[in-house]
Image (tube, one colour):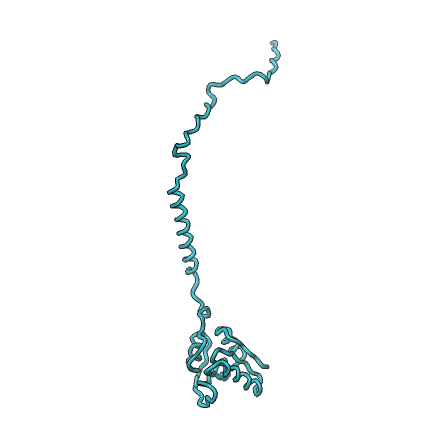
Length: 178
């Protein structure tokens, strides 16, 4: 057995074509062929669909899973009577029981008393805000401790925590004099 040495491969020779190899690509289609024109109507329709779907989603996200918070409602700025104020506070979860009107409403439209957190609450409704401020000044000079929520035409004087919560719910000023 004599073996013949292999012939060295010459890489400079062109490869022998294989008939089963892949064929060359066909020429590109002409420029007027539908492949080269963008489907404008389809693109516009899809864009409109995306915009509509986004709007629907925004509306649904704003409604799903959220009950309106009662505190999110804008409270009235003025009240016609102390009883109307007490009734409004009660609807907002700030109960003030055993309301009774007070007849000595000298400088007020109306005054009343009720009980919140086991303590007496004084409620007053005034004609203008300057009378509300005057009520604070008058009481601050003679009573300590003093906790008041001061509205546009009303004032509430009661226990510290309850009165502070009234001011938060009604979005008005809270003042305290320990």
